[in-house]
Image 1 (cartoon, rainbow, N blue to C red):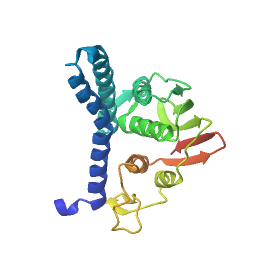
Image 2 (image 1 turned 180 degrees about the horizontal axis):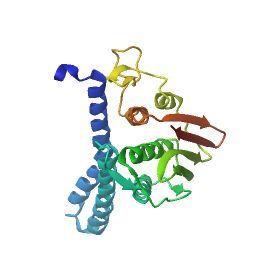
Image 3 (image 1 turned 120 degrees about the horizontal axis):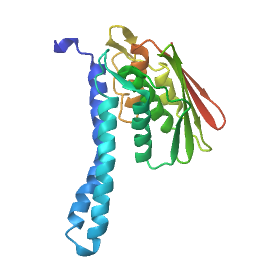
Image 4 (image 1 turned 135 degrees about the vertical axis):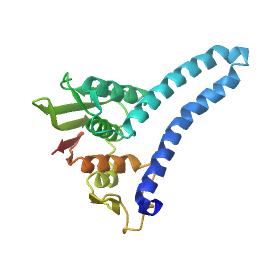
Length: 232
């Protein structure tokens, strides 16, 4: 059984686990340090505030990652309103003053794997930003069914990463991750799995979801914006 597990899949799982631990570490460290400060009277009030804020942030992170990187069943669904809430809470936790706008919040439920793709692309879009930006999400729904979407990132200081975009578009590949996706992860050749890191594992994971469920992605960088278009 173990022999059938792809090295790339193992590498992906390890990198995702490391990323989650890395993202939690800073907030947990603040809580740990603040607990020690409570013992000092002059810092007690500030320490309690830090613990409260950090705990709330940690809860948001946990809810977000538990949903985003969980194993979604074909029958499980969530509302678009909930997708908006999860993504908005995550962006607030980054403290970058990023405004998330859904042009229309449809009152329908969508499959969890589609919701995961939407949130994944919002995270990708937010990684191009430093501060003071707008992320507009336009969903295409026909007959209560998700068809595709467009995300437009508007900012004066975009940090467009071509290497990560190549991963999203499948231009950098490693073979034999899943039988129905013969080429998925980046590398110099089919035996090179070292290029999956905590810095780019989210892009690999996003590409896997997009490809696994039969969608295609178009990325269009402009002067002060980037467009991500997802389509069947």
